[in-house]
Amino acid sequence: MKRTAASAACLAALALFTGHAAAQSSVTIYGTLDVGVDRVDKSQGNVQGTVFGVSGTTPVPNSVAAPASVTTRLSPSHTRQSNIGFKGVEDLGGGYRGLFVLEGGLTIDNGGLANDGRLFGRQAYVGLTTPAGEVKIGRQASPMLIAYYLVTPEALGSTDFFGAGLVVNTVQTWQDNQVSYAVKKGPITAILSYATNAGIGNGISAARSTATSSTPVASASTGQIAGGLTAGAETPSGRGKAAGAMLAYRTDELVALASYHRNNFDNVPIGVVSGTTLVPLFIGEKFTSYMGAVKYTIPGVGTSIAIGGHEAKFSLRGNTDPKVRTWTATLKHPIGLFDLSAIFLDTRFTNYTEGKDRGLMLGVDYNFSKRTALYTRFGGIKDKRGKTVVSSATPLPLAGGPGAILIPLGTQEVPLFSGAGQNIDARTTMFSVGLRHSF
Image (cartoon, rainbow, N blue to C red; front, side, top):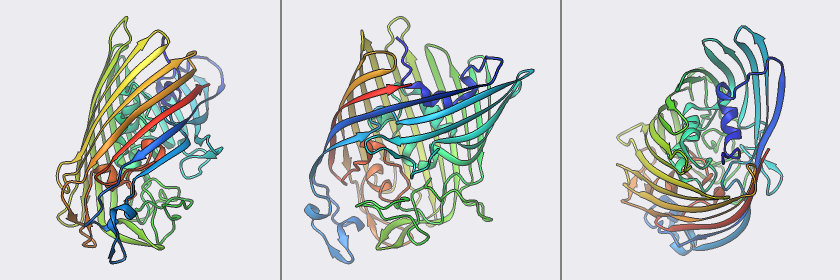
């Protein structure tokens, strides 16, 4: 049985492949709603000797700075990112078509908007399909994000560890101010993109468009998360410029692809917020990443296996250039109306702290239909802090694996466990039961 729940957002991102064959104008409303009840358990972290373990200059015990916790929540987007979208196409004749997509993320536990409250925070673009390929202009999925959508048997929800490398830098996902060109010839698909500012503000921190109990509101003095609401404004210096590419071979049984991403930080401070002021830990110059993956689906059985590798490098002022290497593998097997899945994760700093995160996520979906499913997920991630190092802009100490460091520094988005976060040198586990419907 082919599933449509995972495909709606991916197909909108890949308008070239949606098969706009009707010789007339059409508009389609589509979306996915995913919400569940979860329990998140975090063991006590170890932040001693790091900037996260002090208040001013006073050391704070681990039991206070990174306490063990158990939280029961109603939270969105466990297996799919909840969204609603509108896509339209007009056949212009001669192999030409005009098209548009407007797509917004939803937090259906509270009826709000994702992506910093943007109405169409996932995609908002117009495009033109020609006999030579397709051009799209506006906020779009990056080639790196499209690559992940094509190979993960899940769909990049908060329990999909396969996307751990993707979210190492938030602007590898949805990018402001992007122009893209895509071409498909038989099983070969190629995409190129360029953004005048994909979403890098004048400072990078965990601040968002609205304050929470753990993050301050974004402002000129606090900076904001990479890809934040006001981060994509173009500047004369070219801050935030980005380029990406993807090349894929796609058949019903086999998908093999490679993707590239690069964006310019332009000497932007990266750090933590103290009060209402950004304390720089690094000065970012650029970010570069590469990804390769293969997915194979066994004909007549439906079992799919995917393996992916992602390598990222933060080029920073000074001698520190942290590198993050991520390996993921997924197995998904259908049994009647059930889908069984397992996802394995290993992500680490190959230099710098040499901290690492390892995880396993198990899942069961019961598919009432192609559009509606009841699911459960159980799994966790163990962070190993590695060695303590000092930052280059302000000599403050840091330790931990990629997730434990990059999330509080604002470069990584927090789809992992729907924003539950991680303690340094601790185990985080989740058990969830939820319901999903696509339309």
